[in-house]
Amino acid sequence: MAGEKPLILVCNDDGITAPGIRTLVKIMNELGDVIVVAPDGPQSGMGHAITINGILRCDPIHLDDGPQSEYSCTGTPVDCVKLAVNVVLPRKPDLVVSGINHGSNSSINVIYSGTMSAAMEGCLEGVPSIGFSLCDYSWEADFEPAIPHIKKIAQETLAKGLPRGICLNVNIPKYEGKEYAGIKVVRQCQGNWEEEFDQRTDPRKRNYYWLTGKFVNYDEGQDTDEWALENYYISVVPIQSDLTAHSQRTAMQNWNFE
Amino acid sequence: MAGEKPLILVCNDDGITAPGIRTLVKIMNELGDVIVVAPDGPQSGMGHAITINGILRCDPIHLDDGPQSEYSCTGTPVDCVKLAVNVVLPRKPDLVVSGINHGSNSSINVIYSGTMSAAMEGCLEGVPSIGFSLCDYSWEADFEPAIPHIKKIAQETLAKGLPRGICLNVNIPKYEGKEYAGIKVVRQCQGNWEEEFDQRTDPRKRNYYWLTGKFVNYDEGQDTDEWALENYYISVVPIQSDLTAHSQRTAMQNWNFE
Image (cartoon, rainbow over all chains, first blue to last red; front, side, top):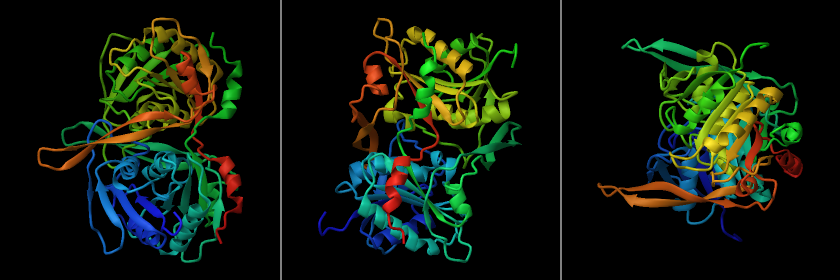
């Protein structure tokens, strides 16, 4: 790679026209050669879904006058990364970035997140990968104050690398008109969603439901992503694809399977 | 719960009529009061996807003469568990079981698997949860020889419990006409899928793709799920929803974010 600019793959889950990814493309254009392969529409909450019972399309698209190449894909965020690495890109990228998500992917949100699954898929392919999320669901959210921090985190990741199977989950507090407190490397907060299903009746008198709910934090630690975000820090959680609960493996030595 | 039979929720990702879930329902009927809430069609490869941009339906269905109650749901496996726990069930279940999946969910398959995401959702709700998979993709697979082992694992899980946020990923080798070698509690094997996209042209001359690929094992350990399955053992991997890579958190202490 000596002398060459890094090759950077950009993906997201809000769709290729979302303001968040348009901001991320601009930042990455300053760091390397950028290729965008992103969903043609919203894919939030798709987790690590892949398309195995249907076909995928992936076609070039021109959205602005930047130097990047862009492809719009019918699949999930994970499909996009697989297609990019195996079909679209001329070589293995040096960095995969996903986002900037419109909304938080801290704590347990990470396992539902298409944004983070794209980053996870990148690191499974052996590429240093980062998912970025702004804790502001508004389509008109102010991404500007986060830009220098996103650039710095991407630069450090390019310089230091990441082991295969480990990627970064970066969450940025909603901008409150003052400079961010800094960047903290923290752990995933223990928390969960408490669902409330909104039951309704359709015009044909059949029941249906909307999924809603609220996040509940079980974790009082001051070394978590939720704590960092509440204190106006940008949180960085390294996350891994190895889900083994080693403590429980030990605890199960006295289980009787005979 | 003294004197009461345990309440068991059954889910899957192959759809409510799949032979795998029909077998699991029969086994669970011997252990407790069973309620089935499962997808109305195939949801393989859906990972931890949830339905946030559309509606959900969940309606009673009668499929056989067993004592269980059953509900067919339009959503993903994770939607099914959320609907079951919050809308359908009279109280929090004592056990969530998902499967029996038609095909392996060992190693990295766990993160793409709707079957395992249903189990993960169960343990996030604080319920001991298990995903079962048979390493045989055939619709006519022979589940019979696995039945006593599945029953035993479910009984031990009911007796011993599991911590919140930890569930069990159980994989069963394809039956080869002789008794299984036993049950091993192991770790998730390090491996990945190497994709090969099958590019085709539709009748209107537009390109499209089918996702295919093969599993590659990077891991020579004799304490992994892949090793256990190759040696005809049933593998049990406790997996966790906390994805924090603690080793990488330490490694990042010398990263420069200033």
